[in-house]
Image 1 (cartoon, rainbow over the protein chains, first blue to last red):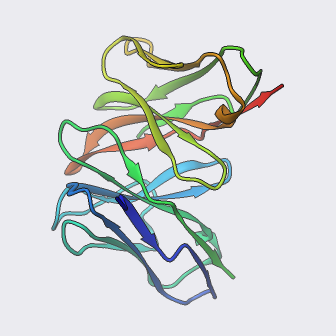
Image 2: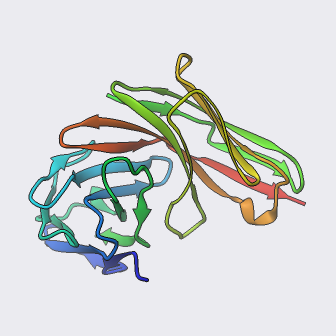
Length: 113
Length: 112
């Protein structure tokens, strides 16, 4: 019973490099979310997807792109990483209308040098 | 936009009761959630209030007053394992799906 799986768990990048964070859920959930967490800042929403084929910007979308590849997978791409993107990234999913609980992955710790 | 305020830190003794407050400002409010996060771990869901009043789940209770834009999480019979960060989050709807906006979290330290 995997739930929400994120890869990689740790990554170190140099400024300007690109990378994609992968997220997959096996709960047949409709909605998926990407958050970043920084010390003292709580969880801030980057992008979210109500269902396959739709995505919306959250609070802090600049510097990121997302793809809802299918119902299971929601990836987050950094095209040109910056030190300000050093953070812990969490993917989450929610069943859909009428369901309130978010299920989180274990996080991806990204350092940009 | 949305904003939430909660205390940054709270300390309490094992076996005691602690209340963590949350005030919010948002449009299109659906409800208030609470999440727990241990150091190095993922947030996990604790409770949700859509209507005014108290919701009880074991040792944890959550309260909401929509007219005051205020809620709290009450933890009773504190245990050492309750040491964690607690986040309130408002559920609202813009765009194509409802989404959660989180507060900055309250770090609870339970001492002997």
